[in-house]
Length: 386
Image 1 (cartoon, helix red, strand yellow):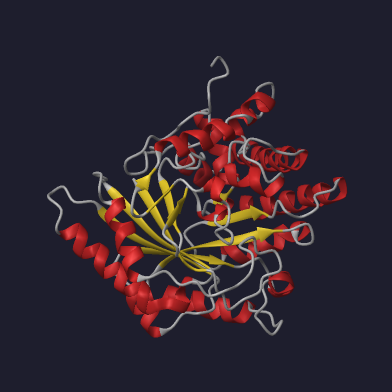
Image 2 (cartoon, rainbow, N blue to C red; image 1 turned 135 degrees about the horizontal axis):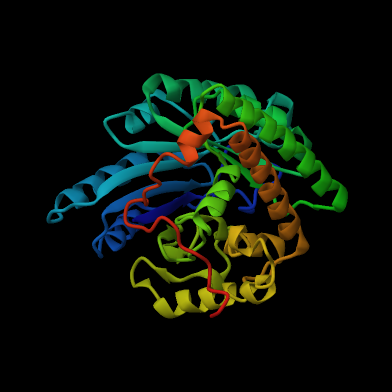
């Protein structure tokens, strides 16, 4: 499996207060650059290709996205069997859906939209505002309703800040009712996570866990990450692939300038030469990838003695950059937040297991956890004996 992410433009119609992508300026990817990126992705045989659009707000350039999609479909059709399957992924703020955009993603195309919504109206509108400073909650809900109506799969992502962490119970309760196939809670590691803030996170996670447990008790099974992944780390003995950060292993991100990064969250304003691993004309430089992986691996020395090491996302390069600005270096913030998620997830699992909750047991214990296309189910961190 390969995920090719096209960072279509740095421009966005929102001005979210915590955005990590820097200044909003127009530098739109050309169709030629996108075509070269697709050609590069298909140069080696893959069983499945996720073609992901990122930004900025990618739906500001719908015509370009449609042209890229058609090119990728034609390119795959010319390959000898077995041809890779193709899924479209759109990472969006959820405010730019049009009838044309819905037509583009609707079945029979295989597509998933990742939509940002941070919680109830006042939680969401605290940070996710437009260029005039107005909240966007109602517009996002309208967009999600359109996705449901057209049968387009979507997942929702809530950014967790110091200010909103204590409200996670309300947030998860709202998100569970939106019709998503999965929920993601993503910590803003650039926030000042003091001891008091971490305590607020722990309270919020406990409340979120209570809501999720009631969801299982009602017979519903909807994964909430990172709770879901933390439970799998217990059952499977490590970070499930592809959740583990491989840094250039199964994901490539191409910028409008044609430069390749190992992850979309590393692009920013596309000014960090030290994070670039190639370009669309020359491909990926294995030496650059190896150097970044070596730098990222330094965190293992710090984390080796920790009992939570194999269940923790301290190996994620994006978190390193958000916390310290340097691959291989983390701060106590990551330790505190990861421990809080693990504790909250274990409380959910232990409670529901002790109750012998049928839907929970069916979901986690009575089903085969098969590998994602082209990958292994579980890929452990570096061996403690290495």
